[in-house]
Picture 1 (cartoon, helix red, strand yellow):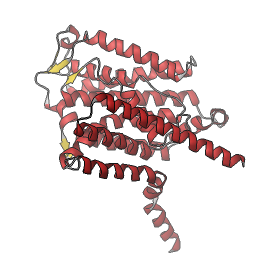
Picture 2 (picture 1 turned 180 degrees about the horizontal axis):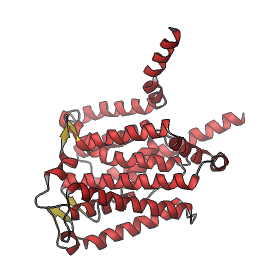
Picture 3 (picture 1 turned 45 degrees about the vertical axis):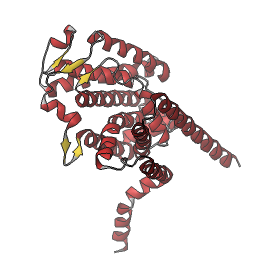
Picture 4 (picture 1 turned 90 degrees about the vertical axis):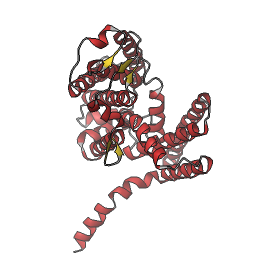
Length: 342
């Protein structure tokens, strides 16, 4: 009987144990929401809450991939460009998509096939990033910065700099960005699925544990028999595919693809992941923390939009949040080192 009881207790407290390290972040999120509800009376309306879910789900999908990358001690600055590439490829291949540039009007395919091709293009970008970083031993910052420029240039070349619009947008494609399932926006539903899969992979699979090991101590991970290069490559491919998926969802939502889509998203995504407790040095971070970080930034941005705050103030505030988050993590890391030394 006592054994059964202990099993039930451990099962029932798994979620709480996962959330417990992030109680301060959760408290900050709820406090923010309370403050915003006083400042902007229409903040807590159902429509606005659904809008926060829908908008931040797109960056949230990318943030799950960035969590995997940062856990290895890497970084990916090419996600905004990958976002744009996938959106442009999907829009050009789906029926109803049109542009003043020839490439957007050559071939039309069923929606699902067009999306798969766009995701395959994204995966190739991630694979190139992974190979350059692991085989050529180029620093992730430099490799992905170069890819960011290259992929953005490819998008301009492919679109001719013209936006790809829909006239009309097929219902099968519009559903990804504008549809609902059981009153939940489809982008939010996709985000939930990505979160659940990402959380499961990190917590219950050898691959997930290997990412922590690689970021924590690469030499020890190598001696333990972990295939470091292979696992890092996989992380960059997953990151690129999730960026492409986010770009496709955004293209569906706004019924348009553009070569400038996703510009600056890399900073928002990295800020959210770091704010959620993932270390830039690698080896430390959780999916739950990333989700909370995404919605903290999302609530702030939504509140500022409702209040009509100019864009440049929003950029300044985001920058301050990143600085404070990095400062906090650096301070806490230094404090722990001192305690160990003592």
